[in-house]
Length: 234
Length: 234
DNA sequence: GGATTTTTAGAGTAATTACTCTAGAGGTCA
DNA sequence: TGACCTCTAGAGTAATTACTCTAAAAATCC
Image (cartoon, rainbow over all chains, first blue to last red; front, side, top):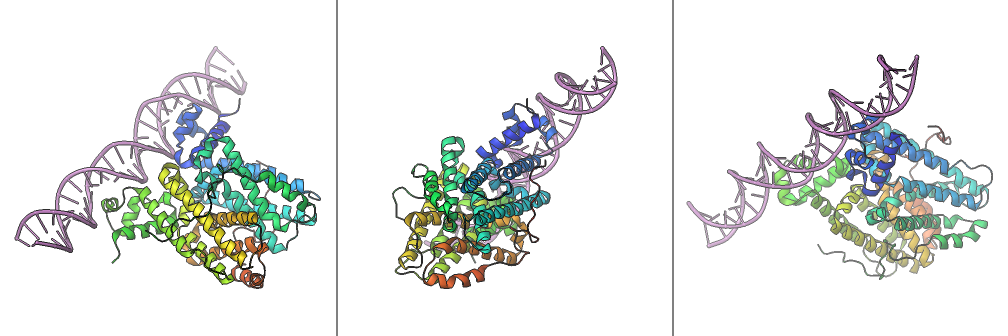
């Protein structure tokens, strides 16, 4: 039997992801778990402590998915990295929406988060450099940095954006997965111009694998096409 | 003398952007304005109505900055578009952080927002297509779509991300502007691989203009460099 | 099996906050 | 001037919610 502390974190994460942290009270968490509020506060000083713990967990997971590159990197390595990032992002998708609020009030957590971003950027850069060393990518140092930042931003924001547009996805695992796949597709397109050698051979297959054609999923483009809402009435 | 209604929106926007909507109560807004809560609620049914009105305003502004392309587009047109987007995004930067919460509870607002995203995507695509028609960009339809989505996501998320990392920026106009410039830089880098012809001539100058080298501003990379936090202790 | 510590229950509370209600001021038009 | 309408003040409230407190159950230790 897992400890109460981790069970609190599990259900909190689930509820936060599904309904948004703001709509989930500590009493909700306790109730969903079948424990008393007092018990919850025995394990966590306050709500911020729960969020902070979830952040630690999340960070841990990312580091596990993104080990520093050893030796030559293959395109398969890259795809593994990619999937790992988005998997983790997905797990903590509520964080990117609601963490800023806590960063605002908790300087300590903010420092940790800033460090996390910098470390993540550094690690990602190492990976990109590894791919470049393997001849799979061609880009200047500066371009690589810019690419890294854009990849990071995209990965961080994608779940939150899609979830904001379609909250129903939170309840629908299949829809969730489809949106996730589209996120991977976007990152692949982001990197595409820099790919070289064998990576180019796999590119089309990768695109095809992650491209989402389903109009029920595609929230970003209208199915019908080309008209744009009136710009200047109001 | 401007009307009370618009003054409410002005101060609400200011406070929301500076402190986050969640930390700003309706009473705060009234107090900052020097009016009574009752007066505020005479003009707006509830807090959601204020947020919704701010969203309308914001959308309006974006449409004004992004008129549909007429005839051949120049690189200057593109830069104007770019700056317009980020200027607007900046004005409503709190929205991208806090709107999801309201979208969650107000289906009507959500529908409007979804429409806005789709329209914006369509409009942006028209612009990119205009640039392609002018020979400034070379890309397949599919690549152009993916590029548009990535540009959108980046522009939407950039202010929120930087603001989350450095809340102090909200109080510091100079820092704010620097971060904004970096956002433009990132978008320029995003488009760079697809530029052709005259656009390529201007590219380096543009990059140089928007590149932010200042380490006090750069939150994303460590100044010192290359070490990464321990991955597997905790 | 008693003592001690850890964990849990659950009622309760203080504080926040979105929002209401009534009364009145100020302007406008006849 | 008086009727009418728009706008404003400001005290007040109902509901939410993070969090506390006490006591008892459960586990642990000797």
